[in-house]
Length: 305
Image (tube, rainbow, N blue to C red; front, side, top):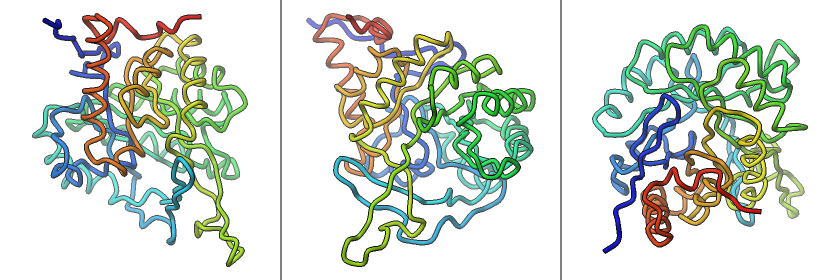
């Protein structure tokens, strides 16, 4: 008889019944996927990226398929944080899963205001997306310089009464120094990686496929990069890491756990298979049982050399 595997994880303050979350921007606000997957089976839902005010997003086309992935330039289309609290959060609270609000801002003040507003709600955690352009620094993303990462995280921490996850961009010189800056500024957890910057061109029209020209690349193509960055970050910081980037099957998730992630997030896979998150959870559990482990936490960071 195979022993039952304990899939619970404790991210030093955020406890989840399993290590599988769904990535922001790929799962809407949950209700879009309810017909296809039992939301109670998912450890956490990172909701669609929120901004202080509603956004219509970028012009179309804003999504393009690529070999082993997709490019997107959606532009954070969302109803705004207040509409989320009024219309979407009550729906999500009926499920036995952690609700993680992904926040985005063009200024530090916008981030701080959103953190204050959401701290008075039933969300379990905030995910600070620092890949946004800092309009006061000429549009340079907050997440590309260690000093900017430290500043925005430190200030948001003062206004945030919830568990704080900082989502790191891979488009940086050294992921280790970025991870350390976020930790030193008060992050409870890191999530990585966000999308790589990419482009596709239609050779018949000789124009970019995306209306905005460039976009974020996600999917299996970026997994080796994501895995390496999670591995490096996990050996640099003491806070937990949620790994993401090209996780399509249970085996992919196991790789991230072995690399040092305490939990994982499923993104692009949900577009291909709406029940991917639940299937990946089952795949991880089956692997652990086959290997004789009694807890998912037994393999975190245990890659061998």
